[in-house]
Image (tube, rainbow, N blue to C red; front, side):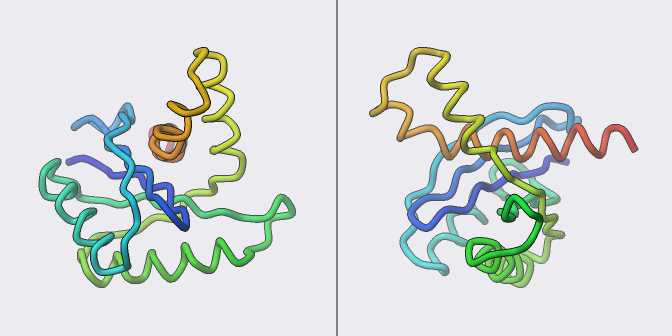
Length: 138
């Protein structure tokens, strides 16, 4: 069974999915946020399409490890996802993932306009791959 990784933003949600063995993360898409109900519907469609059994949601923390406003939004979204999908939702520290994604895309010589369209998907891939690497060592 696969795992889905999500990078939650205020305007978009980056989505990545693991391979069936849970070794690698691949970017799927960026969802334009419309409202909680529609956002979760779109995620549920991806969950069904890929036969996902677990959700990994990026948890933004402040650099000192505390949870700020963005972290509170992620906690609320995680609870809604759990209630609407019935799947386990794992919170994965996402500090600096968007910066790492931006750096990777800049190094790939991607234009600013193109980076803006895919950065959230790449960040979701980083979040999910970090989780997959962590659990593979257990």
